[in-house]
Image (cartoon, rainbow over all chains, first blue to last red):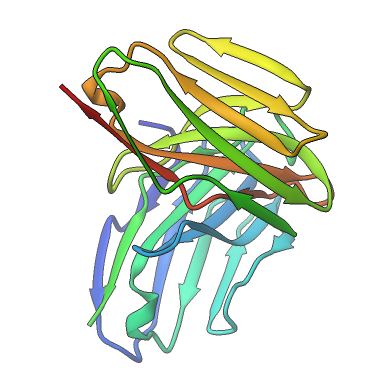
Length: 114
Length: 110
């Protein structure tokens, strides 16, 4: 157990729907990062939050949004889902913005859009 | 932005050594990381280099040359459980986000 908790582990939904993925960072970690990993692509950075504030943004679609709450957990909202959104979504956390150990990843949410 | 290249696949024999190369181009470098990822699982941290040279950690070593934009991960005394994808990642100096290469799938054969 890495200490980063992601729920749900699996999600199957239809095109056009909206889903929310949840992440609880490791205790004491202030930064949360979201990544998407498709079969034919590597880990793609979506967005980063640090202590409740958005810190960096990657190629995140406008249909996707995220937030980090005062208790530091984060949610990634995916709307108007398309078949191509099927992927593994990972959350990672770190103490601050810069540390030698890099990130600690959760076990991911596997999203299947049908 | 970042541009990170690493080979797609490598195969080696149990007990052998494999070297996975990674080249990168970045507008602001703040460290290079290697992660191991088994299929369907989360990436796990292996090593970190921010200065030039070799970092050794048991059977795994990682090397960095910042002037050449080059790193390698060396896996020694390969075991079957080392069959996995190995991800090279570069951290940006400005926003500290990690950008990952596509990964190198290593297959260890008996």
